[in-house]
Image (cartoon, rainbow, N blue to C red):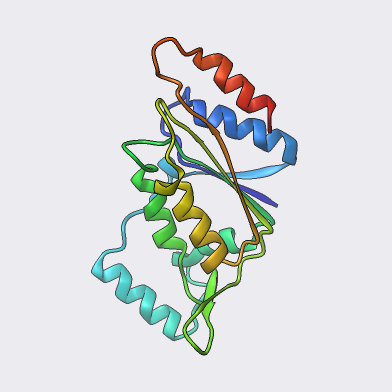
Length: 180
């Protein structure tokens, strides 16, 4: 199963359009539309609950439903526009919520993360109104996916310079869509 993690809040999102071009080549997928989910930053109470559940080995608690969904996906596509020098904060909150030791990752005897996710590939899709700086978004996702979650391959699909005067945003977007 391909998991589509959609972090695009606009109904006419260019990032979502580009992601759907990627998904069209992959076949069937399950969409997780983050803006519609009740995902919150981890509070002290939530952290204590998570720590207690993990320590007790109660990995089937509903708190871990997103972590299980992520860990069990064969492929993952994340769409997140490049906003204010990074991705939307909702994506970071999602990652914070899925990072459950024993589900997506474990630690080796020397403390090194060992990924437990099934996915062979994660595709990160983004668009930017100006120039795109991958180290502030894709770089983070790539490192977490490969180093902590055990996903072997990460790929960036992007369209940039979409809001620059004189640039043909639709052509840039269509070229990116046709190149996937």
